[in-house]
Amino acid sequence: MKLVKHRITNFHISFDKNEFNVQLFKEENKGSDLYTFDSELFEIIWCSSDHEEEKIRHFIENLHQETDKTLETIYDNLGGVFELFIYNKENNNLFILSDLNGVNGSFYLIKDNQLKFFLNFQNFKEFQIPLQFDEVGIQTHFAFGYQVQPFPLPYKGISRIQGGKLHTFHANLEHSTKELPIKFSTEKPSFSLKNAINVTENLFFGATAGKDSLTLLSQVTEGNERIKTGNFGEVYSADVMQGKEIAVKLDLSYEHTTLCDEDEFEHYANQIANISGGLGTISYVDMLKFVNEGIPPNYSYVMGEAGECVRMFFAEDSNLAKALYNYLTPKEFLLNSFTDNYKKYIEAYPDNISSEITKNYQGNSNAEILINFYRKGRLPGNFGNRHKLLSVFRNKITPFLHEDFIKQTHNLSHERYEHDQIHEQIIYNSNQDLLAFFRNPIQSDVSVQDWNHRMSNEIGEKLYDMLEKRIHVLKSVFNTEKVLALAKKQQKSPNRGLYFLFRILSMAIFVDNINNAIVPCEKR
Image (cartoon, rainbow, N blue to C red; front, side, top):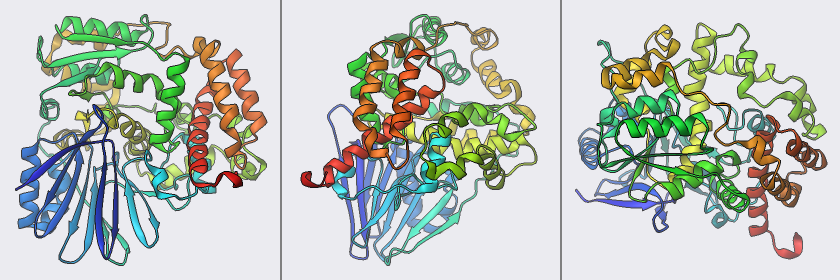
């Protein structure tokens, strides 16, 4: 079996009745793992950093022997973040399976009667397709700050592969889907994340004051020379102080990365916009610098992503809209920024959002509804954007989404999620010395990214200048003068409006870049 390993920053896959063509994009010292396999029956593209080659080979062997069964039971045997393209040469069908929650789901569109799949938007200019806004998608994107099913993407004609399903694209480009199950464990849970972590030799852990990070670090053997740790941010923030203290306690190497200055802010803001298609928030600039400059190219990044899947991330509340308040854009910013075309939507907001969540994410209580929303909505939408950004720079391991951990924890009673019981149990089982950090984490008045202070100096000026240069491309969506006025106000008194501006800037950069790339100069 010839399995070829690549390190890629993106891919474009073209499919129709005559062609299955794969184009891989690569950059020196950047990217994440992708495997290619070719036999008489299948051509396979396997995009994942969460699996050892032995596991991949075993799956492909089973696929050739029992195709239907292997596909239908995939989530019992494969977890983490991944995506598979399986081209059947006999019938010219294309099967696509993303991870259970669709964190790594690709985007796709149709051009010239051919399907085009792409991992991220970094090379979108090659398609030579103008961008058109989807009215519903654009509203919900700026309400949540990311895409949430069942709402469409902000751009017409572009969709994303959903997780938990077997997608079949036929030779005539017809698309059918089949929900796939996962069998939850009926045995007493023996919580561990070690199998998920030990998929590669060189690992870099994000060390913070967060309980997800602490839980992951509890799985590490003290003094392990192949483990590195680090973090970014203000040196007197809780995340930086506790992260360093834990690294020292575990006798692990530790590196700290400073926050972006104004030039780095602009550089990484452009990276975020162009990789995410304007869907990722510019607030990720410091994290992207950390991954790019702080993590060695031959190390995989281990972060606490998805740990909230077994925590009470949202507070229990009788009013769903109130429970979501801290995770939705405040109404005042939408009301004072959108054009009048969106007035009807904003008048019904946020109740229209909470009612749609109730319809599409099931549960017998708000707690159940919200945990299902977190897993199936927030995780693929928000963290999916972040995963795609970071994966352009480094391999990323996602232990909380390993199939064994999901099967043991995702079907437990919701009482087990209260007070982070599962995280505490994992730490207790692995390294009880770390329980002190769990029960009494370091506190600090200094925030990690210190946006309030940074907005009052050069970063705030840079944000305004970048918005002023680009905002015209969103004039059909926003009152541009009011957006710029908000940017000025945020320089003086930063609050949650800053994060709204970060999302606007991201989309403005991307749309402007694409418009300039495909519209002849004389028509601009």
